[in-house]
Structure formats: structure tokens, C-alpha cells
Length: 279
Image 1 (cartoon, rainbow, N blue to C red):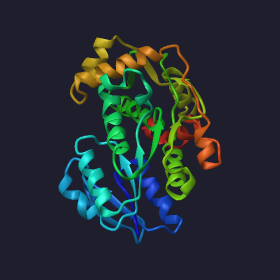
Image 2 (tube, rainbow, N blue to C red; image 1 turned 30 degrees about the vertical axis):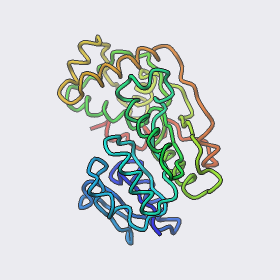
Image 3 (cartoon, helix red, strand yellow; image 1 turned 90 degrees about the horizontal axis):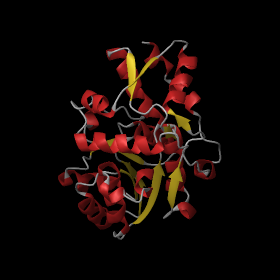
Image 4 (cartoon, rainbow, N blue to C red; image 1 turned 180 degrees about the horizontal axis):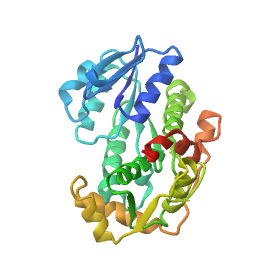
């Protein structure tokens, strides 16, 4: 009976897929574009687009557990079909943004909150992983360096708790394979509270080159991302960064409790992806 991993092209999903397969577990890779997946030998893939309910039945057939990304558009239909298919356990990759008292009014947090609430009302045991900032968010800076040679930051002193994607995948393995962890809600952070400026300084040391940083206004940053980021999401990010400017992030020890090892540092992530910042 396979475990369905949705979003198998993503960094967390693809890593999770490999880790589960290496443990000898039956895994099914779900993706909007399964033809573009590279999966371990012996792993089946299936089309599963979380905004297309017509893809749910085949993806969920004979599945016992699901690793699920937080797509709210048809979450109730997904939960209903999962229950009908006999799914016993869903592990949701949510976000620590739902912990904000105003989460329901924040377009980024609200989508995760809606999925959590829908699954809480469903007759399937749900385990919730709430990571903070992904270390991989730094990839956007590599793109900025390639296009303009400069990283523009409206709040260089905004703190985050960057989490390595592999740590999230290992946490997912733990809750998928250890019954005593089922049904819990876990706030996952990296090992350090770092400002954007501190993360860039780490990247400079790792890649051995100076990285140009320019402080910009909210309006200038919003304009620079308007082609691909809706204004309401840009505004939500700006408000969050303003709220964490000069305020260190709260760190938890949850990742180590789940995986049995300390979480990987942002320096470790930077070393693994240094070439992207040297190009």
C-alpha cells in the first residue's frame, strides 16, 4: 500500500520520495506534470494536480498515507476522496505563518490556515508540519544577481529561521513512519535566527565573492516584483518583514526531536548551492 507524495517536483517532495524509497517503503510520486519527474527506479508516478479534483481518485487509489502541500482551492474534495479511498493519515506541509493572530487576514497565512481547518474537520488523522522560512528562499537572490547583479532588500534587518529542505523531508519521514507521532502539530525552525543581511554575509564567505546589496523602499521593491507577485501577497510579505525587522526569530528544538539530529545550518545550505551564486 503506497504513500502518495504530492508535489514530487518540489525540493521537499522529491527528497522525501527518495528517503522513503531508500527505506524500502512503497511510494507513489504525485505531480501536475508526472512526465517531467525523475524518480527512483521502481517508484510509480501519477498525475495529481491539487487544483484539479478530477485527478484525485487515481492518485489516491490504494493509498494509506499522503504527504500534502497546502493548496486550498479543493481541499475539502481532496479530504473527502482521501477518506473514501481508505487513506488513514495525511501529513500536511503548512507554515508557521498560521501562528500569527491575524493569520486569517493575511493572504499567505490564510491559504495554509484554510487547509489546516479543512483537514481538522475531515475523518482522516492529520499531522501538521509548520516550518518557518525555507533556506531555499535564498535562491531568489541568485536570480537577482544573474539579472541585475544586485540584491534589493526593503528590510535587510528582518530576521528569519531558515530551514534546510532536507530537514523538512526527514521530519516528514519521521511522522509518516512512527505511529506515536501521528496527529501532532510541529513548529519547525532552523538552528539560527538570521537577518537577511547575515544570510547574505554567509553566502559571501561561502562563494568567495562580494555580493552587492541595495536597501530600497517598500514601493520600489513592490514595483520590482509586480510582474510575478500579486500586490496583496507583496504587501503581506512587506508587512511581515517590517514586523520582524530587528526582532530575532523564535527557535524550537522540534526538528531534532523528530529526526534525532540537529537541524542543518544556513551555512550548510549555502555550501551545497554555492555554484548558483558564483555564476
